[in-house]
Image (cartoon, rainbow, N blue to C red; front, side, top):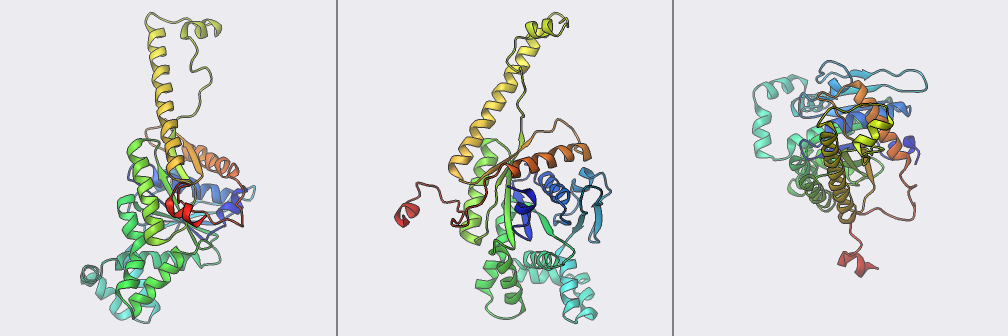
Amino acid sequence: MDPAQFLTESRVVIVAGKGGVGKTTVTAALARTAALAGLTTLVVEVEGKSGLATLYGQPQFAYDEVVLSPGGPQGAADVLARTVTPDEALLEYLGDHGLNRISRRLVTSGALDVVATAVPGIRDILVLGKVKSLSREERIDLVVLDAPAAGHAITFLGSARGLVDAVKVGPINTQAQDVLDLLTDPALCRVLLVTLPEETPVNELIETAYNLEDQVGVSLGPVVVNGVYPDLAGIGADPVAAARQAGAALRPGEAGHLADAAAFRRERAQLQAEQMARLAADLPLPQLALPFQFSADLGPADLAVLADSVRDGIAGLPEPDPASTPSTAPADDPATEAAS
């Protein structure tokens, strides 16, 4: 599939996953891929300081929009970024409704905390409402939202439906319905879930996927499997024979250490392959595999490798069948069988 076509299938892409699986790294790589495809991309993060700016070699940013990566030759576009907080989103919402005089006083007095306690989910719909507003700006081709970690992602994305059901009239209902319209329209929004090829993250991702589809009704894009060990040619070769062929000499004990390291790498790769196969069996969605980066602190060079992997992974996806509607329902689901 053409990357630009894939990335413009919806105006907002929400990247979500368990903490520690590299969700922010995937967000950065996806945004970079979009920019290289000529799409002006805005990255929105909601949890405060993250490693996003470091990946682009830039200083930390806040609510004001910054340029993480300017457009350049060969049609590349800008990667923009900003943080969206409930307080700032509330200020803008009140300002847009002619309440500038009281907006700051409400935030500084802690009134938002009182409202958030009385109306659970209000913070989330303020943030998501702002994200939808940003996606409507003509200068922006794609908004990539770095969502909260998986445990909070379900409540974060499910808050709108809960408020629509709980609050039947008034501005809260209107805002919640507007956000729900965003989340449930595949042309406006998709969710990309991120995992590591390990048992616990895979289990949590599968559970999150079905909960999001059942409780929120979002459209799920491909699953991003981060940290996959790339294939190494000659990993099974005998160290002594390989050294002799290369004209190198091994010191005493080195052949054994090399053999042990190669065996460990093969074992880890096999375990990863098993988890990816299990994920594919339990969650029938395409997978985008990103290679493990052997760096203590990821930076622009690592981001370039990951963005290339995202592009190549998207290019390898099958073209969508317009006659079919994607679903995470497994093939042997009783409901699916009954419908057929």
